[in-house]
Length: 236
Image (cartoon, rainbow, N blue to C red; front, side, top):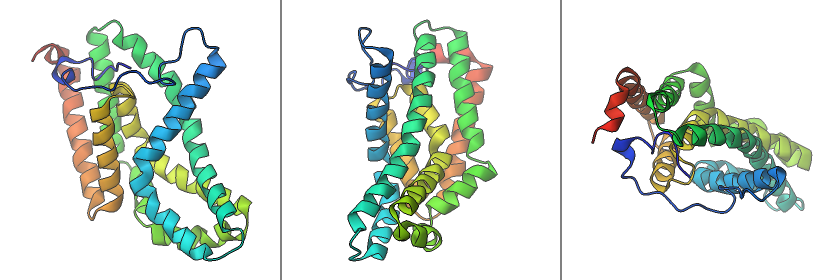
């Protein structure tokens, strides 16, 4: 699946994965089925990308539950809540991908400027209070467990709500980076690896907040260059 960023010449040498069923809906499939396949593949992909970042929270909650007779059910409800957030995000992603694909099909200065706008938006978001607010919570699994653990261990509904909350924090941290991934082409292996690495380092390693701002500055720089000089995308 192509993207408005991978369509730019300087990035065109990045290898991309072949089209995968579900991410390239068949023209003969009904719209509902095509959307369902896309969302299902999107959720699996997001779960794989987020695994290193969400594992500490899940392990902590599992330890808190201990030998509770409903342990498996509550962990399943927690996971279901988390994945539900990304399922809803997948529906939005489907519309965005269709728009980006339409732009990439007819390269023009407008296409380049759209890619630049995506980079500027993602870069600017890295500096916002909302990004910092969500990142602080994602970087502190122990604090999350202390705050939401009692609700999650009390009932399946509480565990589901906790999963929704944790998913919302993750989405708040990562939606702008995911927008860059959509612009690059959701099945581009290099972009998937890079963004997954950025997400993991932001959330797991010390000084992740600093890295988030460094990444933001880089995105802003490239976005400004492309916006000011779209012809740069045709060089290389």
